[in-house]
Amino acid sequence: MTHTDTGLARWAVAPLPVAAPESAALLRAYLTDVADRWYELHHGRRSTAEEIERHLREMPSDDLAPPDGVLLVARHDGEPAGCAGLRRLDARTAELRRMFLHPAKRGLGGASMLLSAAEERARGWGVQRVVLDTRLDLVEARALYERHGFTEIPAYSHGPHSEIWYGKELA
Image 1 (cartoon, rainbow, N blue to C red):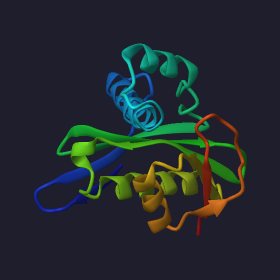
Image 2 (cartoon, rainbow, N blue to C red):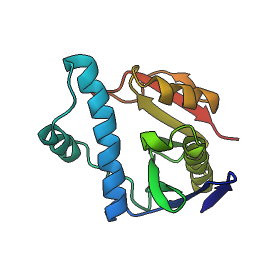
Image 3 (tube, rainbow, N blue to C red):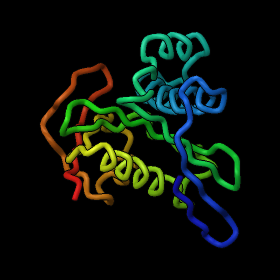
């Protein structure tokens, strides 16, 4: 578990099973956030409940479970505030997935803490590299990754929402 005390607010990050109710709620909030942004950009509207349910079925997070995956949950003053998934792709590489922080908790250091915790977990697995894919319109996420040393890499995956790929060599 990773802790940070920033004066008034306290952050903690720890693994939580994907099936736990708090995990499911965070993964739903993540998907709703990115889906709303995509639908607003491409269709001028937010996502519907039916679309969110379909996306949850089509993009399960079952691969974020041991032994080759983990879901890290960030808590802000004890309340679930965000998550980051990590899964081992091979002996050398892990993939970051489902990186999310509730909008009301952004700007308080939680995203950096989650990202650092994911990198720490990847090092613990003995992998040398973390990769991820994201969308071009998720500019805040892209800026976060770049601030933490991720650089653009060639495509390693293909999906309807994979538009840019990043990687970072772990020291």
